[in-house]
Image (cartoon, rainbow, N blue to C red; front, side, top):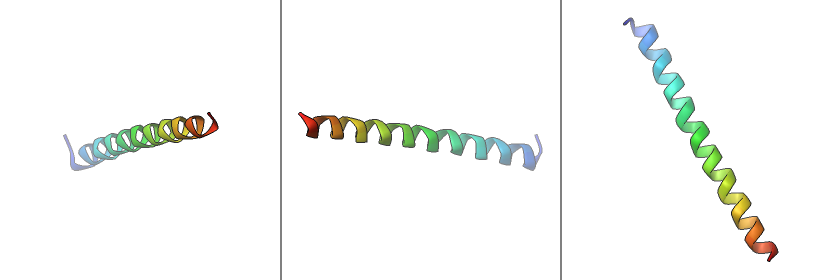
Length: 38
């Protein structure tokens, strides 16, 4: 495995973690907004 390939894997893995964090953040925002409406 070259340095470039390992770097690309690191970037892809970091993007996956970032997407997961954003997804959880969006779900939390929806839950809090729905609780305020009640």
